[in-house]
Every structure is written in C-alpha cells, then in structure tokens.
Amino acid sequence: MRLKFTKMHGLGNDFVVFDATARPIELSPQQLRFVADRHLGIGCDQILQVEPSRDARTDFYYRIFNPDGSEVEQCGNGARCLLRYVHNKGLSTKSEIRVGTRGGIIVPRLAAAGEVSVDMGIPVFDPPGIPFEASERALTYKLNIDGNMIEISAVSMGNPHAVQIVEDVDAAPVAPRVRSSKGTRASRSA
Image 1 (cartoon, rainbow, N blue to C red):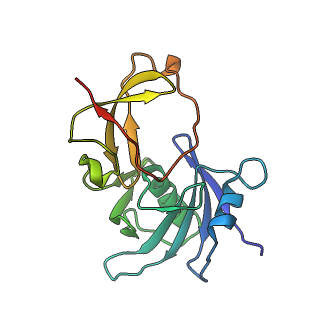
Image 2 (cartoon, one colour):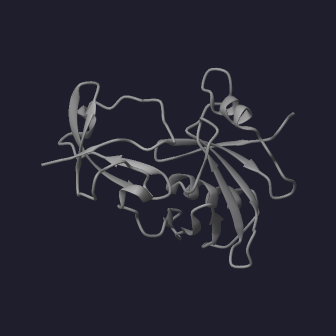
Image 3 (tube, one colour):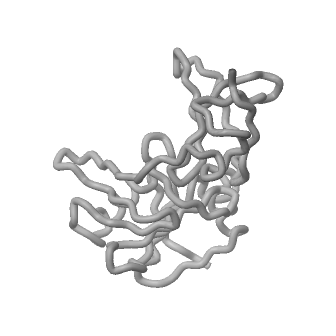
C-alpha cells in the first residue's frame, strides 16, 4: 500500500501526517509502528491523521497515534501542525478551526504573524484521569528511576505528562525512553 504523507515538526516533536479527508485510511497498529520506526520507517514522535468532521460543531476530526500504534486523545504540538497542514493543503482558510479528537474539541488559531496556538481545554491533575498511579492527588510525586529519586508533577492534556523543574534545561539529565500508554506508579513526596 502506498500513501502520501507530510513530515512536520512543532517545537521539537516530529509528526507524520496523513490526509484522510478524501478517502478513509485505516492502518493497523503494526503498520503505525512501522511508519514511526526511525530505522525502518519514516520515523516520528506521533502520527497524525486528518479526517472529515464527525460533528456539525467541528471543521475536521483528527486522530493521533503514538509510535507503539496506540491511539491517544490529544497533542498540542500536533494540533499546531494540523492547522498549518490544513492551510498549506488548501483544506481551510479559516484562522481558527474547531477540531474533534478522542479527548474532545480543540481550537487551534493562526495569528496574523504566523504563530499557531491551541486551546487544549482544562488540564487533568487527578491521578486516575491522567492515568497515574498514586494513593492521593498531590502537587508533586517522587519517582524511583533506575535507582535515582526524582520529583515530578503529573498532568494530562490528552496524553500523560511528567513535569520536572530543573535549574538548567541544557544540563538536565534527559534521555529518550520507551514510551508506554500505561500508567506510572509513584509515591507521594514529603
């Protein structure tokens, strides 16, 4: 099977974008993993698929797939790329579009200067809604990562995020890890 795609990036996240507005595209998790593979496929952080609207309140529907083939609810940088994509391909000339996702409706906006912003809705801090395994909701959590204790905050904007405050971003010990769509265990910090 041959499919046309566009490769895009937003603030360091890279995406493969498929246009399913004219005809449906159904890729299996195995095919999605192949596309996302940086050695054998195209390589990307996520795969975005633009589809016709499923709801009279929206202009498009947008699906987001992780490199493991799982479908997620939202992605802010992906939504920014989506707006650029529909403009570049002539699918819309609106400076603000309403887009349906698994996580609800989002509203990307194109400013006159060319910047794209997106209203992602309300952040989720409640551990079961992230999903994040914790005995109770807290501002921060301690995690044991390879024998090192680190402190994070947990939030979801459609995808689980662990936020760590560091003094120097360039010196922070951050290395790529295998991503999981499963929850993470934590203990509450003191």
